[in-house]
Amino acid sequence: MILLWGLLSISTIVTFLVLLILVRFIGSTQLTQLTFFNWVAGAAMGNLAANMIAARTIQDWFFSCYTLILFAIVSVLAAILALKYRLFRRIANGEPIVLIRKGIMFRKNLRKTKVNLDVLMMLLREKGYFSYSDIEYAILEPTGNLSILPKQEYQSVSKIDLVEGPDLSPEGQGPFVEIIVDGEIDHDKLKSTKHDEAWIQEQINKIGANSFEDVLYLAVNSQGEVIADLHRRGNISTP
Image 1: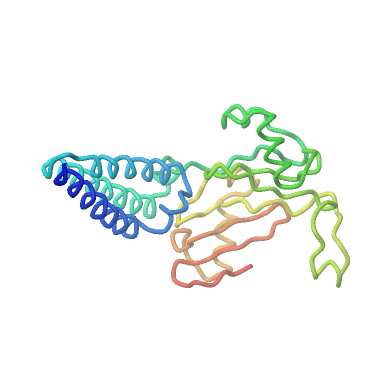
Image 2: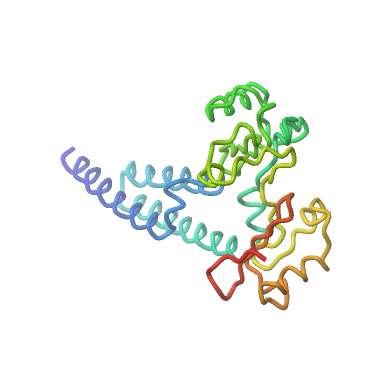
């Protein structure tokens, strides 16, 4: 009995240290569980660590430890693939989905995300809005959080508003649409902005790039404002 309790104590302490090292190795995103991928990886690693703690023999403990380390390595490789290939990142992490635009709910997107009206209204109330008609854009992030851009008249006053006066134009700036990410053009989003590749080439030439492959990030909003960043520099330029 004493031997069993000793084995359990040592197993718990060593398992904790192994899990701590592996989580640090995977990265800080695992701690916050930013996406479904991170959540699944965290839950699986927790279950494997529990098997290590509950192991009754040294052999079972090493089997579980090997499985945990192998799973951590696969998680790291998947994270590297997500960094290099946007298609894999979109499949593994998902994409933001617009639920409300200019005070109108997109019921098709609500069904796609499995979000019912009660849940949507609860998320809006948690953000301090009790009517969806007050919302310019509501976007469901891959993390499950709801990002909200209220209409102009419901936005907080900024310092520039105090200097120049508030902009209450009906158009509104709207969110930026990501057209280029990691040197890849999202043709569906490009089409939604009513621009073409000739326009993209004009924009990237303004920031000193020759090809869209040189661009780390390029986005545009409904007012035509563009933000872009090149692979070879860290600052953001606004043409």
